[in-house]
Amino acid sequence: MTPAATLPRPLGAYARWRRVGDLVFIAGVSARLPSGEIDGVLREGAAVRHDVAAQTRRVLQTIAALVQEAGGAGLADCVDMQAFLVRAEDFAAFNAAYGEYFPGEAPTRTTVVVRALPHPDMVVEIKAVACVPIASSQ
Image 1 (spheres, helix red, strand yellow):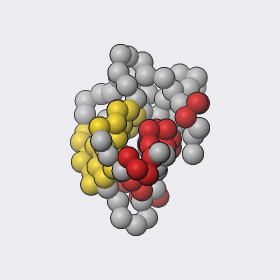
Image 2: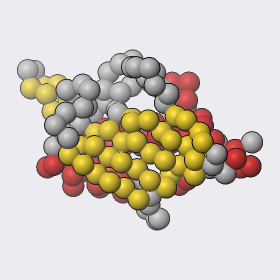
Image 3: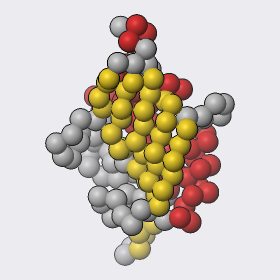
């Protein structure tokens, strides 16, 4: 799991997460690293290839760290996720990598294909909602 202190900072004026009662809302997370680079970008000369599975894993690791930071919980406490993919043909690889993190009961999920994400090397973004009772986070 990624320690919260090493998470990338938001690029804009928004919170990485907000808590409302027992719910923790995680803002959209990309595969951006604290250095500003994006995980899962493979450069071979002038060619660039995007590893959607690597980006999906990085996104879920970051979400896990944010849920931990927000309420001392983890991915198992996520109840809903919204995933954004840049390419429909990446769905199978995305779904396989996503499934590695939810071998049992998974949160509900909506996956949509979008024209683009904020950086051309981002091919996956996920936002999440976790349920973490206040009593268990103290």
